[in-house]
Image (cartoon, rainbow, N blue to C red; front, side, top):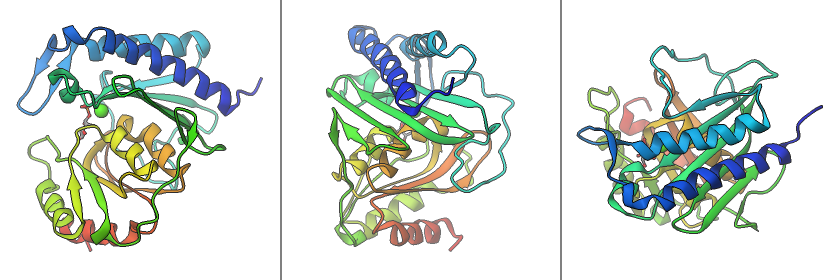
Length: 276
Ligand code: IPD
Ligand code: CA
């Protein structure tokens, strides 16, 4: 029996709600860490929430593949590029991409801006996605054949058509020794946009673009699980997404915009990266 995108989205919503509500209910455990590094933290709740989300998906779709942020990604190499494909897989393969807590550092400090993100890919292309921010009471959803929504209300990107009038959400790559100079990109955005914003949650940043509250999003070192759901939500709200470059494994340079500012923002970023 063919599974439709509505069924996939329903399961993704159930999984994200269960994982996100578990994190919210355990806020008092937010400092229980498995590992703390200079710019990041891995929480026990990251791992617990991923297991909760995975269990919901496995019960509904036992033969589907799952890729979670908390999995071991040691042996993954960069895939070849193909237009519209986020992560190349067999054409009949369904891949669930889970970020159990996006914005883990925010969460660990008690800031409410964090979320659970679940994207579903078929043949490598996003077909359903949910971004659930329980502490904010926001549930963003989309499928490839429906308009994006927040708490059931349709979303639409802004019509801002100049970078100098735009809010651009971004982040600074926390990984040292990267060949991409993230501060150069940040400076370029800060010098050209009306305002840059670093809010610490890539998936919610992109949902803000989908909602027309921000006009663009760009990061030089973001991961597949941060963008799998939110990228689709931007597209289905009328916006545009683009992988500027794939680095090793699941790391991407990723751009998401309302559409009208896409080329201008891309030009600024490529110039800063020295590849224009
Ligand atoms: C991070 C957040 C942050 C972004 C980082 C991500 P995590 O995800 O989305 O906003 O700047 O690149 O890795 O580690 O909190 O799940
Ligand atoms: Ca993340």
